Each structure stands twice: as structure tokens, then as C-alpha cells.
Image (cartoon, rainbow, N blue to C red):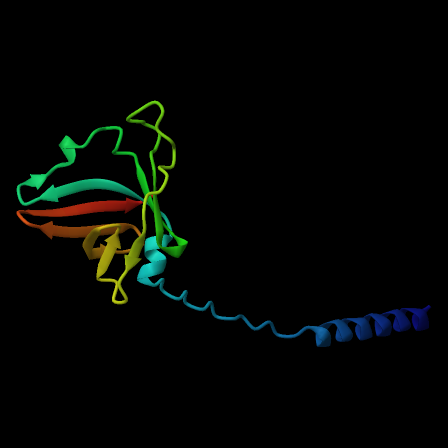
Length: 148
């Protein structure tokens, strides 16, 4: 009986040693910091909702029709942008995505955004905000967008 007990202890000891020696110390990899998005990636990464427009006299937002306030702007590949008309329509027959919206181009230094015939100075472009400025003969306009 004693020999049988000793054999069981010996076998269990060998099994425990094999188990312990097969375990490797787990090395934890440090999470790599995520690479910051480029201005181009930030611009294209989401839909943009216009939340205000201001001229030299202040906000023009109260003059903007309610049916336009929920429209979304999306910058897509190949330099094409589109407007999604949102849920409130200005016209019952208005398409959800307005066709043939136009082309866009962001300058190499991300300081200028061209949309169709218009050119805007990019004053702010972050993961959540876009602020564009344009001026012409007798006017200045700043347009504010938020990510959606």
C-alpha cells in the first residue's frame, strides 16, 4: 500500500513539474500608440453637419432654413463630395443624396479646401470639428461643422 501511495505521489510530482516547466512567462506587449490621422483622413472619416455660419455682423444661422440644418456633407474618395439631405426635406421630391454635388481638393498643407468653384481657408480641422473661412468682394464667411 505504501509503495502504491509513493508511486502515485511520484507520478503526480512528475506531472506537476512537467506542467510548471511548460508554462512560459507571459510577456505583455505594450499597446502601440495609435498613429494620428492625417488632415485628409480626418476630413474623409465622417459626415459633417453644419452648425453655424457667421459673417462680419455675427451668426447667420437663424436665417438658414430648417430643412437645410440637418443636411450632411461627406468628402469621398476620388475628390467627390455629396450632400445628404437629412430627415427634414425642403421639397417632398428632394432626393436623399443630391446628385452631382461636385469635386473637392485639400491642399498639400491642408490649409485650403476647394469645393467646386469655391475656395476655403481651413481654420480648424480636428476629429470632431471643421471650420472653413472664405472671403470675396465685400463679404467674409466662416462656416462651422461638427462630426456626425
